[in-house]
Image 1: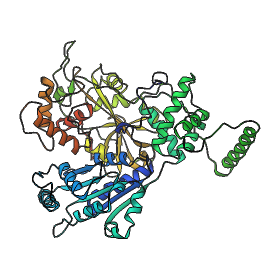
Image 2: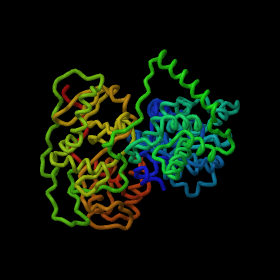
Image 3: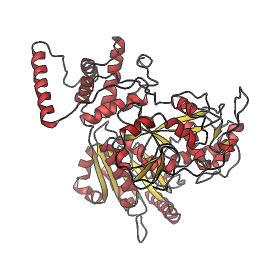
Image 4: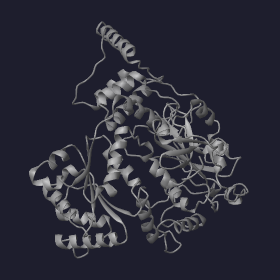
Length: 563
């Protein structure tokens, strides 16, 4: 309703989880670190526990965790644990694709089949993780059955890692005396608290930026009101902010005021305290008191309030449709629809050229603002250069602005350093602050980053970027102009043939036929699960990107370079 009015590509405050909108506040990053530590070697086969109030982002963090699980990890994800102990065992077995025919009516047989699977996985060097969402609804009997599963072990280590996600009631449940044995096996636990005022402001700006906003329509007072009424719970922020934008649209206002936020909150929080606008003279007294308090705060703490604006030339960073160009990595993709004579594929005609190392210099601890400002003019050219296509800067920029007609595709994603390392391609980091601040990342090692184009390289510490980067990045690649938006079972033609070629080069290659049939769809779902993608069995833009990375020899994200 209000998207075109505010210049948005899609709804910025939808409550449906979308990986592109993930906002990792310091609290969420710490919680994610606990989860990753727990499912890794640090878990040692015990339980990992994450709790938080409704709407704080536990399920979203679970998705982030699944995107970053180590290679060779098998995951069983249970979203509806309101089952009996035997049904729980059956659900875990089905998620792990264990054949339970003839055993579903026997707890002993189900445990035996699961134990055999775990021993085989251990022999292959694989880890097995069970993730249970909404774990607070598990009965004490089901929790006891889960605990008994952790007794499955070899002489040296546990065979199963279990992650429990739940509301605060889960903590109370595990404090029961009859569940103390389970509580003692929790090796990593974290309680996710709501966002603070500052992170609430960043969260609002982040979601608007992802949705393509050129400016932030929320006044600072409106964002303060959003925090007050939502108490920093992301789901409530989304609901109230969405209603507030609709109210501004209805009133033909280009900005959202605190009054609109309170009115919207009163609509959605019917059972809670209603907030009314202060009337004069109470309003005058309140404003005067706030002014005195703010003056005192500035005098005694030196706080400076940031300007709530965005530059007119800021790019929309959400890409709402499939992008397409002439090649995918070093694989020439046959065009499905060709309206003009095909041009030679730039990357296939250029031999792999070693990346130009940065000049010998000390590692920079802080990004220089002058260098960063200059880099904004070079970032798209730098990305074109790493693809050995120096005339494609405008095409790359157009793709990342949503124009798929000029030779490149672009995807906006959200993640962590480890996810970018797994992707293995140069990316453009989207930094916080200025809506148009971007940083080309070409290399990453333990605590350093190689940033800038080949002719403007700089080695900086991760810490220098961490303070301004909340996980958003852009990745661009050449792609056939006729490449279909989605490919699914039953499709055929040159695009499917290319997909089959890609699938034969990944870590667990597809070794079936050359048709997109049920067998390939099953393999594809497994591939999507291993890479933290939605296992829908359809090749869209994100799945295509992960399929083709194994076939791209140049460019690659560097892990070593001269300093």
